[in-house]
Image 1: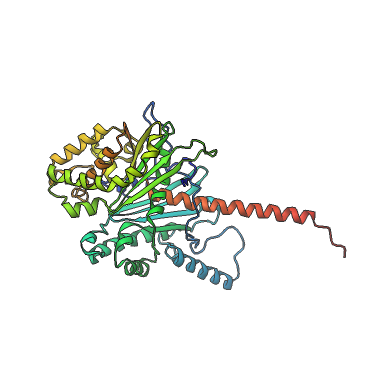
Image 2 (image 1 turned 135 degrees about the horizontal axis):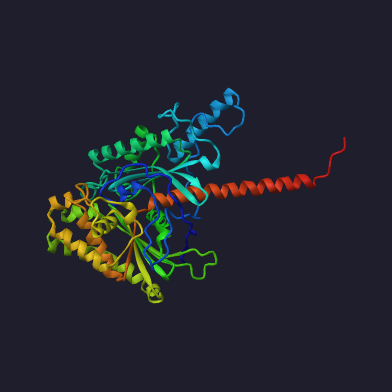
Length: 458
């Protein structure tokens, strides 16, 4: 049974916030501006997809101390109870407790829906990423962002556990994220961990350590939820002129592939997820297994072949769906894909506004891969679109990318510098919107019943 997928709407950024970096994920902090739309190619939305997803785990509903909706202040005891309740909600659902005083001295966020701040945090095998956004009439506007390569999964494939050094790096980054969320007065948040925490033997201890040191409650998401959120985040870049698309997200410890059919007979115009898979193979795990510093052509070919073998069962599984499709394209979201696009465009410095939404051909990808293979580690590290933090991982990512392109030959590929965080934000915003609609319906029903009730005679 195919999975129904969220409807789409486009969003615009408010500010770029945060810091950039050479990899695609870090460079997302350059802002969520509209993707470049090449003439004659598929329509592109800007920003992340608006979703009407399956219900998410309950997210943070605490508010910064001192928040006001314009009503008179409640009695002191009620205020204390309300503060304790907000803190408990934050403990249960992922956000740090609001501090007694805003860290930057700015007024706390209003309770008004237009001023509600949402946060999405994604702790992956390689990166820690955060987006903070405000709801807008057509989606959300980004007000702050953060990304840091932490390599949480370093050595995990060999030992089966997260190392002390990796956990320390991740917690240091999470402390920065928690501080940003407190200072901004985030009201609703979802903080997730993916492949590394799904597989590590000591992930429970790590989650507890994160909670005690940062106040954040990390939620380890399933592979299915990760795949769905990845598609939700980059769905506006799906070309409606095609009947289907293969969306893939090359992560540090896993790679998600999702076969998506375009709206077709869905009366609400929503794409449908036909099938999906999560491979236990990412840039960190593949590079650690084969080596990522010195990568001769023979070693690269072995990596491509290894990934190709893992893809075969999924390829066979969806062959019937592929046969009935009139046309499809690839949509890639990951640091690998955005790095390849940046190198192809000849950028002297990574520029998200030029990369997000760009179309490239298989020939372009092959030329970039060959140029990276011809570089030694030092030259890759010095390249402005690769950098030292990805120099030993980028060729492993290229191998995964090439295996996918060989299995599903497509005339073109679209690059997405967006993904899980954007999908999380829209799921939170849509959940609030649904609750608001239900409250309004209840009020209307109650008002109608009150108007029809017979007047009481004294």
